[in-house]
Length: 385
Ligand code: PMP
Image 1 (cartoon, rainbow, N blue to C red):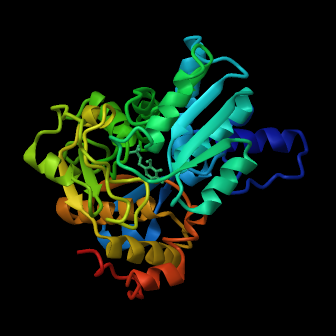
Image 2 (image 1 turned 180 degrees about the vertical axis):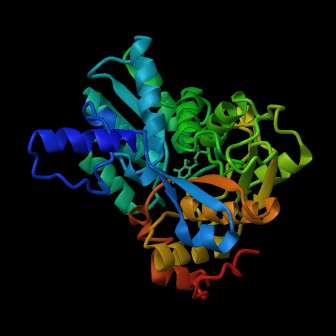
Image 3 (image 1 turned 180 degrees about the horizontal axis):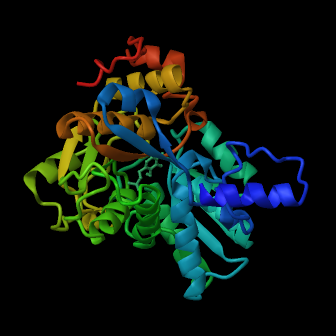
């Protein structure tokens, strides 16, 4: 307020016609972004009004669809490439390879374009065609391979690894599941959450795909004094990290069995079957190097129906158009609110927007085929079990 009074006085002395302060003129504008990479990270934390009102908790979400490449994966792509270039493993003109059917490919293509690198993405040929088209439009070379098990040499991840090995010294295999640059990228996400809430939060809830988000954020948050009496509410609750796990994923059981910190033998374990769930990007059946660093206290299961209903609910009540993992994360936030009780602040992540999901998750015909047309209307949250 003092600052505002000071500004008013200065304006008055300078005869400034914009004498009356406007609500948007509070000095909180973002700094100038330095090129493309300045448009990655530092995303707003949005208060989801409907969920907050209905649960009696503050439900806050990182709006990751606002990254320049449209998803949370921009942070990972940037950190992977930045570290590789800093270590001299990758130079402008060099090749970045990755095996992915998800947003990581798009994020790598965006960062590669900014750094003058080439990008080659291998993906199974049953992945949505629009993804391959977007990647090609961004200048990436797309290799479609037939869907086989991770143990098979022709699995898209193994193809990407081999392609990088074929250009020794100038190519980088991004390797998002095992590369800990992913985890380090999300230490920053955790730091942003800590600063944006001024340390006044009680829980962080997220699904896990590579585990980078939940590992980085939980590690940062728990590195702050977890016994701190948080904020005005003087709550004594520690920061709880909760996982929300889609059908077909086995992380829920692993958390519940308490074997989180033991690295499992990845050999021979199949990746999540993509047909087990409609959610994309979360759920897995092995402990990745990134997930092994997660400090998870509890886990919930989320169903495809809950995710679909949540996406429709957020669009209808808040105008927020979100992707499937973001919707599942919000389901998790509601379950966390119920578990903790009213008056708590719960943070989650909106991984990407609905635009990336027009052929499946937001496609009425596809949902009808799956028997998943949203049924719920109104503002109550009875569809969350
Ligand atoms: N949502 C989407 C859309 C994703 O692509 C991913 C990454 N696979 C996730 C969520 C999960 O994030 P993480 O890999 O950090 O666990």
